[in-house]
Structures are given as structure tokens and as C-alpha cells.
Image (cartoon, rainbow, N blue to C red; front, side):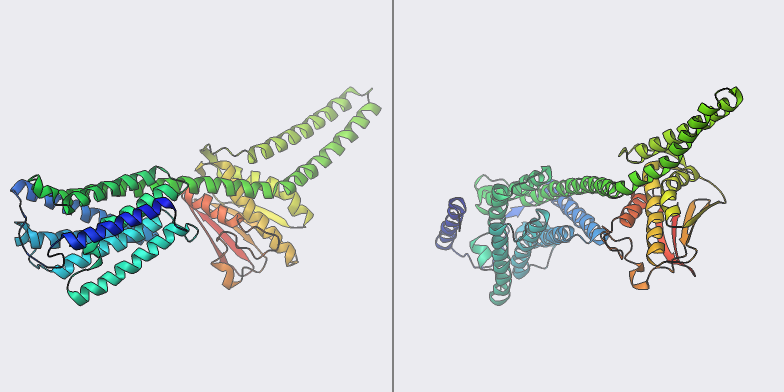
Length: 472
């Protein structure tokens, strides 16, 4: 059901179309009359505007090649269409640029305008994230796309456009962006860059289309300047959108990291209890012996020292676990060996219960600048994955080895490796070969190593199992 506001806009567009049909003589005629004669300064300004638009187009093509994000593709194609439109306009109606662009094609002039509309509409759809759930906007865009394609066919048949001569391309774009501003619930700063950039182009298009430039005798490259300014404003909108997405990625990464930590918290609490049980038993035994040997000062003193050492061990254990669950992103220089030792200390009780041996070989320790907790999380995730697969496959004499060499860490198990069909998937989010696993552990590990620590995390199969390599 169309609401009153949209109905009013559509009715106004209908009256505009009727006014154009009955008021403009020679609406479908093609002429090559020179309407503007630019001075050298105005010619320079128009040429400079071409440079700005071309630069914006090349920049967004590069972004598309890098990211395969359709927003950049449609924007760059829209800018290329603008270049062709302006060049066609100059070749037909503007001197001395008509001596530079000599092709004088009315079909190209009309079709380029339609492509400006088509690619602009597609860019708007992807930039604003309009989907089928945004029913009114989605249907509106699909209808405009269909009419644009129809008008291209009409242009090829009649040698001139039909629909875009009755309703100029800036009017459908105006309809979509005003409805988007009215209907979309969440609008960030990038949206307002985008909205005001297009509003400026539309207002200038209306100014030129209504021949007010001739009425006020304003012979200036308004369209060239407006499209160039629009390129810069929309490029700012795209850049700001990229910043928003990057901020969201960082937040999402942090949430995934915390999710991974919380998912293993039950096991960690069990590990703390296991690590404390023996020292507490030992302390209880010491105190009983001290009571019996109270008359022997030397014995009491030695037992007190033992008790103090056990209490210190317990204190260090709980402090380390507290630090491990601290979500701080503070970075500092740390020793790889010390970080691996800390991760091994957390993992060792569960490895002992599973009967899995773990060895750490240090050929050459090195230091790294980053967040030590996050690096420990990576090591722990890989160790825990190895532990789970060794247990699941009931490997005889299960073993995990860690080797630290200059600028690299290798973690190897003897669990018979990863199936070839899964080898390229292990770092994908939510992929897991284990039951009751969320599949984010190795994804987080790769993200931390490659995005936060500027390293590389890879995996391959060896003769006996899998080898995870962290290289810096």
C-alpha cells in the first residue's frame, strides 16, 4: 500500500511528465546547436572537472578489484557514464570543447544519461543496503531499473530516448533518495554525505534543465562542476562508510574473542580447581605435620617455606587467569617463550587428564610487540584443538610439540592430520569438524595473528599429523 507522501510525489511526477509532453516543442528532435561558448578559464574548469571525475572512477575501480564490493563497481561505472554524458554534451552543444570531442552522437548522449540513472540507482541500493525487507524502496528501485533498460531499447530503436526525455534522470534519483531518507530507520553520517551530495546534483540538474542558465545569462560549466563536486562528496561518503565498517569489524572481532574466552570459561574454572586441589592438600598435610613437630623449629621453618611456595604458586595461577580474561587491548613488547609458557600452564591440567604429552623446544626466542593475552589465546586455541582431535581419534601415545625459532612458532600433533577437503576451510568462521563446537577458535586465531600482530598463520599436514605455523 502506497502511503500519502509517496502518492503525492508520484502524482507530482505525473503532472511534470504531462507538462513536458504538452509544453516543449521539439522534445524528441535531435539538434547540434551550440548553446555555450566557454572562455579559456571556463574551458580549464571543465577540463579540471573531467580530471576529478576520472580520478574518482579509477579510485573506486581499484577498491572494487581489492574488495569485490559492488558499491564501488556501480559507483565507478556511474562516474564513467557521467564522463561519457558530459563529453557527448560538449561535442554537441559547447564550444570550444566540441572541437575536442568530435563524435557528435545523440544516441550516445541519451544512452549515457540512462546509464547514469541505472548505475546510480544500483549504487544507492548497495550503498544503503536496501533489501527486500525494505519493500517500498526495493520495489521502487526494481521498477526504475526495468524502465531504464526499456528506455535503452527505445533509444536504440528510435535513435533517441523516450522516457528520460519526458522525465529527466535526476527525478527518479530524487524520488529514491528522499524516500530512503524518510523510510530507512538508521542513518549514519555517511548517509548524509551521500544524501546532500545527490541533492546538490539534482538541484543543479533542475536549474540547467529548466533553462534558467540561459534566462540569467550564466554561461558557466555548471554540470561539469556539479558532477565533480558530487564525485568528491560521494567519495567522502564511501570513505566514511569504510571507516564505519572497519570499526564494526574491530568490535565484532573483540566480541568473538570474548565469546571464545567465555565458551571455555567452564573448562578454565575446572582447570583452576584442579591446579589448586593438590596445593591445598599439600598445605593441609604440612599444617598437620607442623602441629606434630611444633617442638622442632628447623622442621617448622622448612615446612613454612614449602607452604609459602605453594601459596605463591596458587596466587600466580589465579592472577594469570584473571589477566587472561581481561579484555584489555593494551599492547607491549613480550617474550614469545613466556607467552607460550603461560598458555601451556593453562592447558597442561586438561592435557594431563587426557594423557597427552606436550614438549616445548626453543631454538631461538624472540620478542614481539602486541597484546600478549591475545597471542596466548591463539596458542591455547591451537593446543585445545589438537587435544580434542587426539582424544576423539584415540591416538596411541598422543603428543603435541611446540618449537620456537627465530620469527616463527610451529605447533605439531600426531593426530593423523586434517582431511584434504577441510584443509582450506579450517580458518573460516563457524566451520568445525567437531560436534558441539562454535567453529570460531581458529578464525579468531588467524584474525589476531594477521590483523593485530601482522604475522601469518598457516596449516599443513605432516607425516604424523597437522602443523600450525605462526610466522612474523
